Length: 390
Image (cartoon, rainbow, N blue to C red):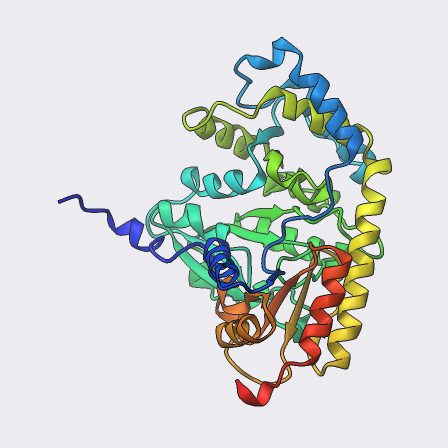
């Protein structure tokens, strides 16, 4: 009889989003017209200029060979140039940048060379579930740091017990935040860098939504002096350029960490298709033309949804970025129960807050990555929910 190891038990529960997909399919088989607002998969097509560029790259036989796991030089140089324009930060394209097959895989692989059995990773709650993956695979321990609405969903790292801090190797963060939509300013990053330098803890900042901001542009942790000693940032083309299925991202920052991650990846994958890498380089080069309409669309949707949820007695948090609305329903109830009630009575699929961690309980996450007509239709359906029947 085949037996799985103890680590597998931590993965035995379905990954949150895969379970949501299954629920959606089951409802559709019943003939329900489901509006899926559970997963952040952009409905906005990839910009046609990127697609046309990619088509030409496909015809170039040079791209049909194995890529470099670290990423091709063209893309790494373009990433370096973009960060200089965007954050006024210099990165060595050879030692401080590595290409990922989507930022998700890099995030999951990071703990494999950082965490020993008994070491801690500090992970926000609520948060994106993948931050736990590599920690589980490394037999590490997880300390949940709460993101509370009264603190604008920013962590208070000074409240972490020192005995945990002393055994911590990495702190994962994500701003603009998934699922809350909160953002972090320069003062937060300055304070965090001081704390991390003092305690010799790596900061792993997930920047998947850094270009989906609604007011002032977001900041990079590397705008703070000394950050390269203790930080890396993960970037993604998925939301920025609506290229979710293309699977392309990158890591920048501390050269020792970046090179170590690349070394791990050399033993796991063979890099991303060069045609895709070159297409991301094209997107970066044309960033200032491509991204404003995407950003504006999500801002308009966020404002519309926030205002209309409030009219329906929901308690939404006004996001400062991302493509999500984080909200409490009109009555106090468990998030999974509320999500199932809404699905069964309004045919709207939402992500229950508990799926993002224990401090997400009581909330639901609305993904604004559906067409405008469905955004409006979902609000119309929510108007007729009778919460007394839950």
